[in-house]
Image (tube, rainbow, N blue to C red; front, side):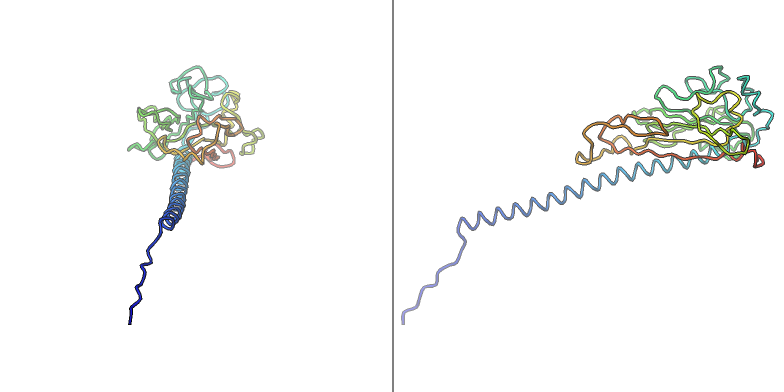
Length: 272
């Protein structure tokens, strides 16, 4: 009986080409999903780091600013003291020079420094150590906050204990800060309007009961967002009623603000 030869199946060249194309499509899809996931992760990381910077900055500012006026006598913080533009080294809101220093300057309390950010300077005579210093406050102390760039060109919020010469970085990624002061116009102990430093009249400094701080924050300068999450042109962001032009589209920026009620300056609450 004659046996029948069995043919080998095998694959044709066309079949192999089709399989290769399908494989490439599948691999391309997987690669696209991976890249999209990676970019989304990087964007979320930039947002999270910016939020973390904002949280640290607002918490640190509240911790320090709420002490404003503590154990400073009312006589040193009187309307006359502010109206006469005399800083005897005791009042809650010190004179601040154009360079941000608190040194008995006659230029008054300034609204902004050279980089367009506000400077906050307050005094208190008793309380915990400011600016991560080791010594607690036992005498009238001036503490000021401002934005400057470090050696790497990073925007940093600094804290300075003026009399002690202690200056320390608090938080990086704070690119702009604006401060408004709550003025009590009807003597009920609560702010009725919020003004910038340059719009607070001399004697009104004795009626400040709150400080509102707004900041534009981002992650560190090396944490850029992927191109698919970037805008085409830099845009403007509102900062406590003032328009701030974002410097670039490669970072994620966020506007945050907090209001600190100054219990030591509230006429309905006894000073500490």
